[in-house]
Image 1 (cartoon, rainbow, N blue to C red):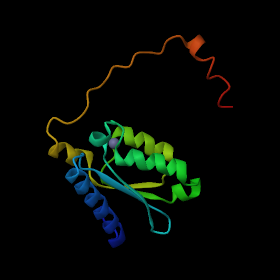
Image 2: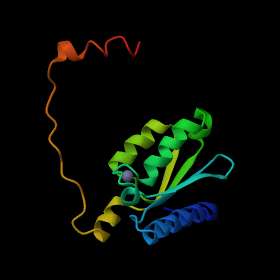
Image 3: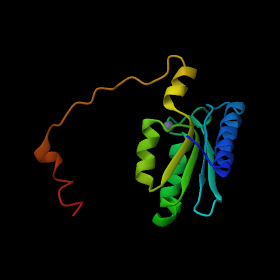
Length: 143
Ligand SMILES: [Zn+2]
């Protein structure tokens, strides 16, 4: 895709954060949020190893930050620039965050070429079951 010079600058910052993450002993991924006025609102890098937290991807950390700190209109006008396309876990968080746009450098396919043996096993999910009991705490909550 074609980026504006300003978008290239932000995406290069995400790549720089990825390199710093690697240099500090974590996985090589970095992201930042750019608000409606073109200001950098927050930055993050992967801290899965240093924090012992499987969810410490920069995209998910920033999605949580945005949902907590930004009003809906600001979040919707905010762009996440990230060194790699968000994984499924992060995509779910981003979709719940209210953020308006994601621009990434490496695609998941490109990452897979650089990460032999990558990917995660599918975990079987079994259900549904006990509908009459399970519906009780949920029924009426969303009305
Ligand atoms: Zn992720």
